[in-house]
Image (cartoon, rainbow, N blue to C red; front, side):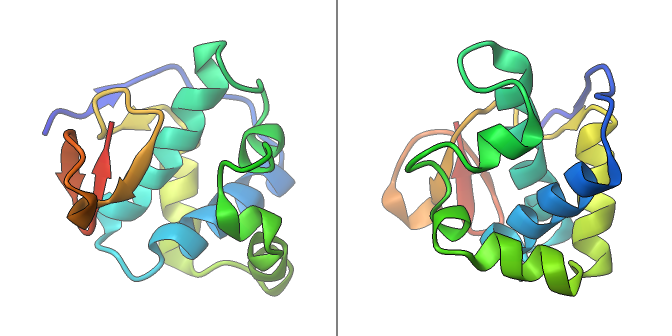
Length: 123
């Protein structure tokens, strides 16, 4: 697995909290590298031009991240995400990408080709 360093993205405290919340919802029980990878996917989407251009709009894009639509992300953000997820969010915002540029992920058990980190495959 190769880690690349992209340019950092300007972010508000709300962006960091929101990114940490989606990381916690999607990979809160994963190894740290898996948490970082979820953050990297969001940031790769922000940078891609093929998705919305803000952290908030990527996370809340219709039918993309089920925990966002279900209210789980807002719930975690309101309570305060756990420290490892906040750290992963900050690292992803600072440009760290351990997914090889992935913009999607799913359970590793799906059999989808890609980079497996923890219980997810990133592609």
